[in-house]
Length: 90
Image 1 (tube, rainbow, N blue to C red):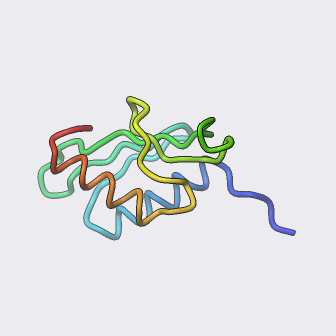
Image 2 (tube, rainbow, N blue to C red):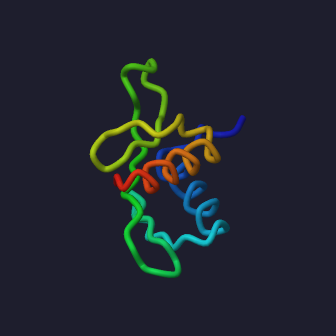
C-alpha cells in the first residue's frame, strides 16, 4: 500500500504544475513562493495544511490563510492562484 502524500509532496506537485505554466517557484519544506517568470513579480505564497472545516483534509492556502483548493486538486489550485493574481491579491 502506498503511503499518503504529505503536505511537502503536494506542494512539490503544485510547483511542477506551475513551472510547466511559465511560473518560477521556490519550494521549501513548508511553503511555495510563486513568481511570474517574465517579470519576477511575486504571485503568491502557498502553504499546504489540514483544513478543519473540511474534516482535516489537506488544502492549499495562501500565506494569509485563504483557501485555494483541496491539495488533491492541483489544477484547481493553479486556477484559483491565477484568479487571485488577476484581482491583485496574494
